[in-house]
Image: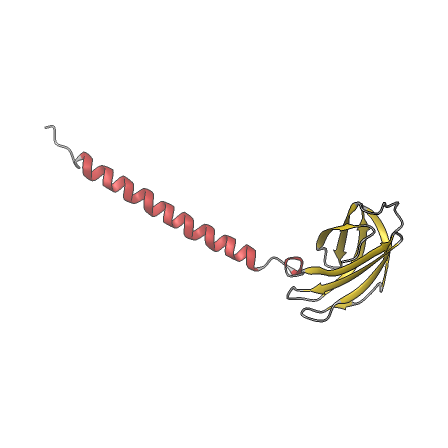
Length: 140
């Protein structure tokens, strides 16, 4: 009585089919989960400010020309040069998406040297952090 219920070939095919089905189910589940997470990222993921131009020819004053290329309005809350909080004007105002460039003047209080690149961080009211590298003593 040495009968086998299934031949080894059929057993192998069944195991491969089960493994492929499990992989497909896992893929569909993970794509649904990732798609849901990426679609509801919050306002920070929809805010995108770019610097169209800047003028830092005077070491104590940095003029920024910001444009919002995102899908929601952005309001600048803080500005940091090399990690030090800087005063800027105008202090309030929402930069609407797809509008003209907004001009902001930053009063730079840290010691800077012309020709050296410095990090500028812009923090919006919703918490988005945008980082740029600007060269002191230049305008673009």
